[in-house]
Amino acid sequence: MSFGFSLKLPVASSTNAMALVAAISVSVFAPATGYAQTPSTSQTSAAALQPTFKDSTIALANGIVGRAVSFISANPRTAEDMIQHREMPPVTLHAKLFLPRREGRVPAVIIAPGSGGVSPSMVAHANALTESGFAVMLIDPFGGRGIRDTIAAQDQLSWAASSYDVLAALRALQQESDIDGARIGAMGYSRGGLAVLDATLTPLVESTLGSGKALRAALVGWPYCGRQFLEPRTTPTAVRFVLADMDNWVGTAHCQAYFNAMKPRNPAVSMRLFRNADHGFGYQTPVREIPNAIKALNAPIVYLDERGVYLDPWSDQPLPGADDRTFDSPFQPFISRGVRAGTRDNQAAEFTADFLAFFDRELNR
View (cartoon, rainbow, N blue to C red):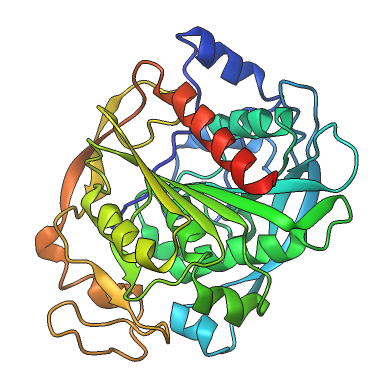
């Protein structure tokens, strides 16, 4: 099933899009080997001429150049593995760290890409954040694992592994001498949105990092919310949902339900629903139809208990040892194809203004 989305190429049809193109010195990254979809010979030849994200030099529009950093993450099969401290295969991931022109130890924001990986839109968001005085750690969750993307096959990477990536990036940032470790936030989109959201949950944070190490703030853009902790505890992190009212890829109702479950436990949880907005509205890319994209909008929410154990949606009974693939067969009746994604009018600019205001409020106090 494919519930994540991230367009890779800017469309230079407007002033904003042209600015986005100018935001990067290397706008297209060669995919890593080992992905499920086989490219054509011409695509393979073109990719061979392009640097990978790891080897690319990325300069923002404001002239700030990203410093290459690596950090150790892991490949947990489930949240249960994380919470129970089971053995998890390690993996080295790569990122670019952009430091603002600001004296002293600075606040920072981790950016977690969606299913398409790092894109020019994310580099443009990094530019906006560094202009506002934040450091940015833009992570590549796929290259170190030999994955191109997860758009057509989400099961290449577990949901738990994606959330572990954000927590591992947080741990790495807290060790950087230029970063104020008490003022770190994260922002993710679609699959990356779920990863960031999971990285605010107390059982996962404390099992991975220990107490007192949580993110200060987390902004989740159009995330997949079909997988939820039954009793979500996210304090002390300020969490902001940014949703699209016409999202026909991941929907909005599940995320609204998750917001309402979190809010009584954490007053610092907020939500904004963009009107007349589709999945990916925060990227400067025009709305388009994607007929082959898989979705499961009407599928039941799958819950996890405090131990990270999945609960059967039909009986509410715990399923110890169950993983993401446990639900492939029972969810088949809910699977369909065809989604719409992209931005309208000034939605991308409004999204940028929203996340800048949120991080200024939460990380500069």
